[in-house]
Image (tube, rainbow, N blue to C red; front, side):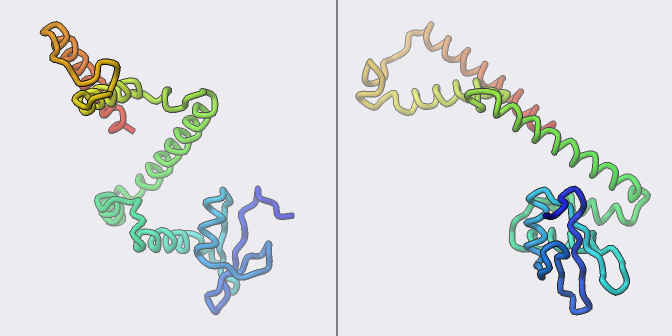
Length: 187
């Protein structure tokens, strides 16, 4: 039985083939990516020199995914990373990136915890009620002229008081949507 607390040791042979020391078989970069997605830490070392090649291979995995069109890193982030190698920011960037990804992981795990605690996970999302109301208003406007929609059939002309009430409700929904967009942009 493999000890999943320790990193999975992968040895690179002179032929550049990668060897999984736990299962005694050769693996590909995609296999290694699968181990990592499954939550396993990996360490890749050169058999002959003992050099740690993990960083090199992880970057290669990222580069291959980016080349396939699975773009995760925006151009401006990649540009900033390249730029950081030639500035005094080089010492700050690794800590910043590590802290950012730690916050992302914490946020994801908290969100998953919340999703399992409530009967309708979507209802707990900030701004969900505003989005629901906005969809309702849209559907009423869209379906209002179709006979058989709702109890009254085709849409009737609103009284000035009803129109003002709908305008207020729409303004409130727009305000809530703007607040939601601000919160999302902060994330």
